[in-house]
Image (cartoon, rainbow, N blue to C red):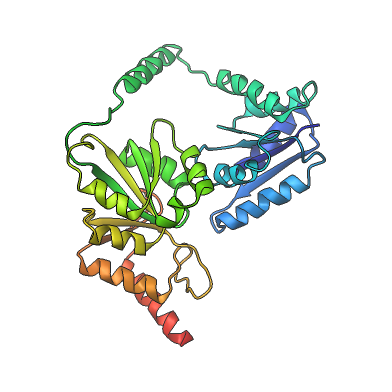
Length: 325
């Protein structure tokens, strides 16, 4: 029997597992994985690995995930890369999808066959009342497609958001920020990631619908910022993995006046003054250099959060580092 892993932000996976059992009966060979606010990508990766090992059949595994481009998808996708001949991932998890997956296991032995089958049922499960709203939604969708920005217009690129986030492209970026600032391109600016073909591939695959994702080194971003002939009409959301990359880009001429600070992962030698930001001395010094360049810091995970005071966070981090000396 094909194994199923349900994965989501928060407790949704466990909730929909319970709902599915109420409707279709208790199921075997199914695991629910939740990604909680106090956890990081490595925790989620381990949860998914553990879930797969608890399945009776690790050869045929179907991941049903809440959101394309979110952390559950991204981490499942890293596992999928080594099993792409047999495993499958379907995003947009809803109850019709889950129930159809349960039913399909009774007659289908392939995760990929089930994935292709449940997609149609999941889409058919989305309906509107009054019915006239569906017709209007279809018209709006067609209008959006026809209004897609073409490349090659004279002018410079517009930067709608520049964010430092060690997780780069994940749910908060793919949904909350993308819907708020409406980019038509997400550009990951990182020398390290640009050299890593697997990470590049996974990031491009995680692109939100209707938005192109590019991964480029810092020097190329600087070159693009100086080009006033080919990027008119382009609304770019820039993602930096580290403050050092952001500083190099700004010193090189990328015209950023504000940096959104999302997350900086903890590692050896770093202190963590709050739940999502960790610093070593080089990080603190880099932010001070950015401040000297009159760069403003917008410390928020998502648009609806109230901004935190970056200088207070840096002062706390510096005090903790000084204690370690």
